[in-house]
Image 1 (spheres, rainbow, N blue to C red):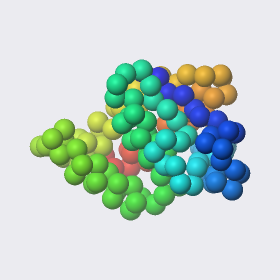
Image 2 (image 1 turned 135 degrees about the vertical axis):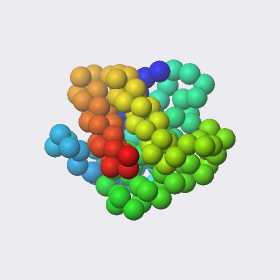
Image 3 (image 1 turned 120 degrees about the horizontal axis):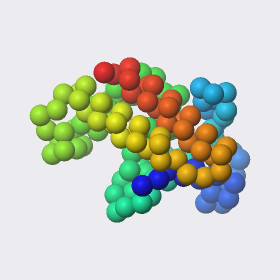
Image 4 (image 1 turned 90 degrees about the horizontal axis):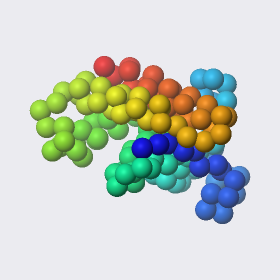
Length: 134
């Protein structure tokens, strides 16, 4: 499994106005599509679960500039939507599971050196947000 960054130029014939920018903790800026929250900016590939993982990862990355309340609501929704997978787990355990998954993805970044830096920093920032809930 690996994570790649989809460059904003040429993404589904998007125009600059279709994107918003957020600042990452390393000072870089990440362009996020305003409407395509499931499939942009990253892609997880390597096995048949890649599509679901891509959606989940991109949702988390697209929330980086959201409030803590929004994150809490989203994490509650994940536990409700994955009831069979999370049955009997506490909110904290579910969050720890997400942290382990994002940590694994962080080590799986692929691309040019600067692309890997962008992926890793965005995932690091997601991890920092998630850690606020354990």
